[in-house]
Image (cartoon, rainbow, N blue to C red; front, side):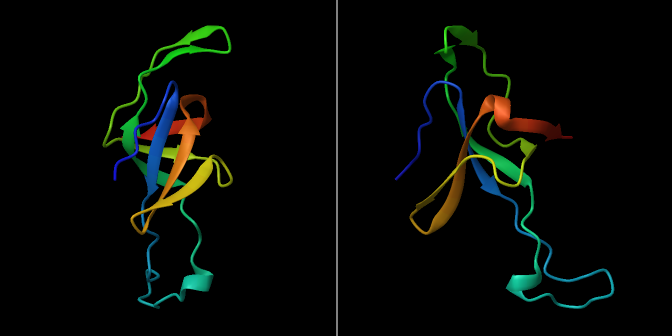
Length: 94
């Protein structure tokens, strides 16, 4: 299956957290911080949202930063995705 976002929505997949510290200590899953960096999997076409035209400026494959508790979590074929509005994305990682 494939997700196709509507209007100003963006589908994100979180980048995996680092599993070891700089000193080489392996961290258990419970100690890992949830990263805010995600890669864009799909981008909606834009359009009229709340009476205003939204032009999509993001592209698939870009890495972006979002808030920790932003978006809607979905699981598809065993993979977790987050769906957010373009306005919820804080920055593009270059």
